[in-house]
Amino acid sequence: RIVYPNILENTVQREMLGRGDADIAWDLSAAQLDALKHEPRFYVMQTPDLAMQYLGMDVKNVPAFGKAEVRRAVKYAIDYDGIIGDLLNGNGAPLQGVIPKGLFGYEPTLWFKHDPARAKSLLAEAGFGSGFTAELLTGTGSAAGGISSGDLAAKVKNDLGAVGITINVRQVAQSELLKAYRGQQSQMVMLSWFVDYPDPDDFAKPFGDYTQKSLAWRLQYYNDPLVKLVGQAAEMQNTPERGAIYKRVNETMAQDGPFAILYQPVLSLGVSKRIQNLLFDPVNFIDFLSLTKQ
Image (cartoon, rainbow, N blue to C red; front, side, top):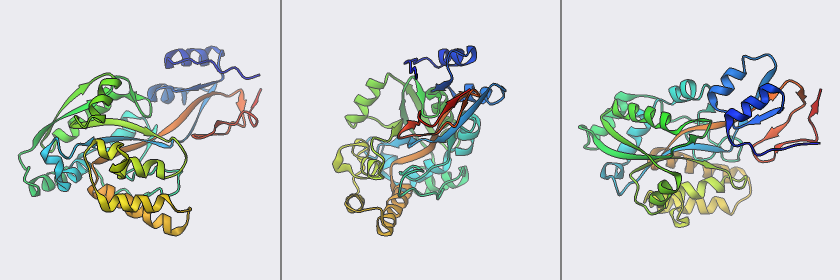
């Protein structure tokens, strides 16, 4: 018999796990998972989620973001290792392409590292050596990977501030954020994107094809050659030719696109050691036929 209660509050999940009222907890925070790793009665099982946390820059509403050099400067300004190691406690993995690890077309290249000097040089090259100001919209809840959206936004604000970009963070309800974003009224946004169906097209089209009126359109990023590439790949099987196109898509988005991919979250379960032979993945989740309980 499998009992699958809908417990939304992660503190309640953690308490139930500790009392033995639950054997598996999903959606624990990064701090809770880190603490659980040091308790002998439990273990943490992890796999890369088919998702990403990203920073979006509107290329029309903020004139600076209309220049690719500025968009790259933002990407060099971010301390990715600090986000993954310090904020997420390892509950995330590096990702800078627009297709997550676990899907065909994933690109492992990390084009950007934390390099404030390079970021300042690019800003000066673009004519923004004295910096500029932008508003960052983020939600009031958790970001992907179980950390506070506010804490992540504060980290991004500090990183960009160090190179002369002043960020005014505004935390709003998700409905208000999405209304502004979908209406092309935002300056910067910080959001996550999760898989709907396990094919790279589920990421390449929203991020690269503005004609879909999804993420690229919301940031007013209109790149017709990229749209053509994404469309070609969508019609193909998973062949080397398709892989080569997605490599070009990933590289174009990294060097020119309005998205700074912050990390790929790790899907984590807090598990009682009474549970053995646990198998799970981000699409099918838990294979209940394989697991056993002592």
